Amino acid sequence: MTQTTDQPSPRAGAAVVPVLAFAGIVVAVMQTLLVPVIKDLPQLLDTAPSNATWVLTSTLLSGAVATPIMGRLGDLYGKRRMLVLSLAVMVAGALVSAVTSELLTMIVGRTLQGFAMGAIPLGIGLMRDMLPRERLGSAMALMSSSIGVGGGLALPAAALVAQHSDWHVLFYGAAGLGALAIALTCLVVPESPMRAKGSFDLLGALGLSTGLVLLLLPITKGSDWGWSSGTTLGLFGASAVVLVLWGLFELRVPAPLVDLRTTARREVLLTNLASIMVGVSFYVVSLVLPQLLQLPTATGYGLGRSMVVAGLCVAPLGLTMMFTAPVYARLSARYGPKVTLITGLLIIAVGYGGGLGLMDAAWQTVVTSVVLGAGIGLAYSSLPALIVGAVPASETGAANGLNTLMRSIGTSVSSAVIGMVLANTANDVGGVAVPTMHGFRVSFLIATAAVAVGLLLAAFLPKAPRPAEQHTRLRASSEEDANLQRAEQALRGFSGRVLDADGVPVARAKVTLIDRRGRQAGATVSAEDGTYALAVPAQGAYVVAAKASGHGPHASSATHSGDERSVDLDLSLPGAAVDA
Image (cartoon, rainbow, N blue to C red; front, side, top):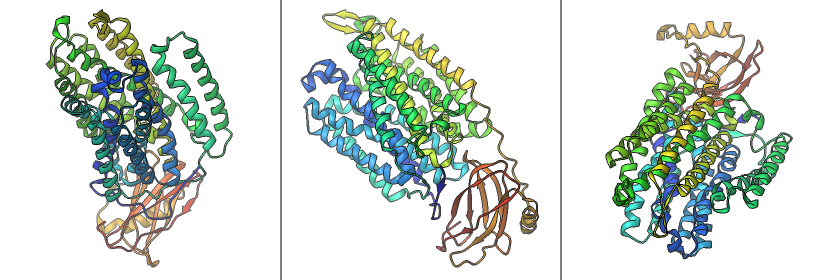
């Protein structure tokens, strides 16, 4: 499968990254919207507690299905287009939920809201297509961390609304944020010209959707149905059969929804498995600390804080994740995303280990939130970089969609397991199940074990190759001579001419070679007759980008087979006069 572009790569303005990150934060707000009122949902919807949980389960299921599908559709038909569609479906779902207190209608609305989960891989894909290498690392880190950032910031805001207003206002607020994200995306974010060849694998999408629903249903409902019940075991068995059949089908179709051969590569497989562990560790703190903070002091261990104060104490989790994005970019540039992932997991382990002894005061939960936020932020930021570096550019959307799905599976597993632990260790007080300190500590130990598994998986990730040797910086007066000499020596690489819209050669245009990891693999300057030549470090897919004063930028995707020859590739710059 290859990637093509028939038009210049769009220029990413300064506002593109904040707008895409805002879209990710809106998605997180949608996810955490009902956390402050979870315990009140049965009364609010006039239904049994087991039925009320479907309001949360439906969003999880639709989000799990939407992430890989929207990622693939974005690769085929345009990432910005699919991003806007995902947000539009979310807004429609929020409005449906805002006008009802009926269980079934609420579930429909929440199911539609789950489609917004596709915004995360689509945003990462847009960044890869548009941003220069020096901005890509921190931008992807911010986008990947936006789920945690939005979740951390939304908790106190949602708690404040729920405590002082009608809970339906939460959905109107989410719809408003979604509409704002759509407007900003349309105004600021250009459409990527990058397209994957092939068609949409409808049967593959149906098979994956069915398999995921059959898998996630017993995970999320197992504690209600019983883990050894016929329904739970039957659904697990059915999911295994459907997913195996789906995998065999995907291996045979020419344009699969998920390229399983790529997914089976060690770096992709281990990254996705580590993503599940990071998802588990992220969700445990979100489940435990708010409950500990809100339990009455009469229990002997509860901290007796209000819903709003509890949200504020957990908010540093998201804020710290946001501030780790630039730190991640520096660490990753020097040591690589593998080292950054391991560092993040180690910090998470310290956070949960220390948190076992920091449960006696509200300020201690803030410290735990800060430490865990730093570790989760580094770990989350590393995941898309590892995926982007391991898959062809044409599969960025689908691959990151699958990675986001792995995180969702981690959070759903965490929700089910921790819910079961807290329920089984709870004390019955007047017919109400009250979580115990023992249950909280067991939950933290489970999170620590998940981090240990994640560290083991990360340790076996292949070592990232060193960045290609940078070309020697030359004085301006000798750049053309150096380029001509390089053209004579570059038997293996790309060569051609840089031309303007009328076919006139463009001299002194900067030509950059970008590898599939999004890193600069070479650079040169076109000669007086517009000629350039770039050697490639290895076979594979590349992007050759050119820019010059008085012209718009242009990027072309091309593949080099690795043989001893130069691939002819002319670069045509648009004539619109913009700053280079």
